Each structure stands twice: as C-alpha cells, then as structure tokens.
Image (tube, rainbow, N blue to C red):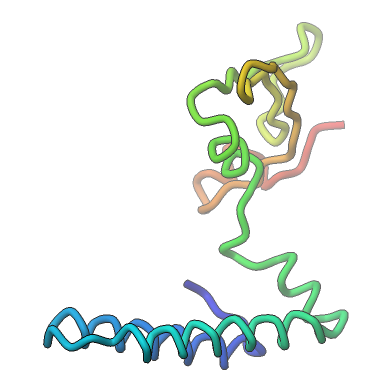
Length: 133
C-alpha cells in the first residue's frame, strides 16, 4: 500500500497491527486485547487526519496511485453482470470511456465512466484516460 507523507501515523499503526497479529499467530499468544486497542487508535487517527486536510492534501488523495477506477467500482458493484458496450456506430470506440449495462438485484442500470488504467500498458490502451471529443 502506498502512503502519502501526512498518512505516516496511519502507516505506523498499520505496521504495529500487522506485527501484533503475526506475533499472535507465531507464538499462540492471545493478542485480541492489544489488537483491539491498536484498531481503535487507528480508527481515531484516520478520523483526525482526514477531518483536517489541507487543500493540497485533498488533491494528493484524489491523485493517489491506489485510488480505484471506474472498472474497479463496476466489478465490485455488478460482478459478472456487467456488459460493456463499444463504439458509437459513427466514429469509433473510445477506450477511455467505459459504458455498459449491469444488474443490481433484479434492476438493470446503465453505467458510464472514464477509465485511466492501473499501469503504463493499460494507460496507453485507455489513452491515459483522455476521451476523444
């Protein structure tokens, strides 16, 4: 996971929690109380940090490399029910724009979004998220 500079306290608590849980697994020691305290402290720290963000920190979060993209949301919400539609029958298929149909329960919805890609190869294929006008 990538942490931003102002998220350093969160990173430290995440590491403490991981070490605590690893210790519990390796030595069969009950770490329930300690891990609960760390989780509570982590929750409070996250709330404190994210409730007092500067404008630049908000920009950093919006550009975070681990931030989910349109297809991530679609796969989490719709699973296998998403049917992506391609092209406009006039010009061509815009790889930066994702559109299609999917079901939530028994209701069908249309989803449209912009896709940037997670790595350089995906980004080139998706035109770096820049739609063709």
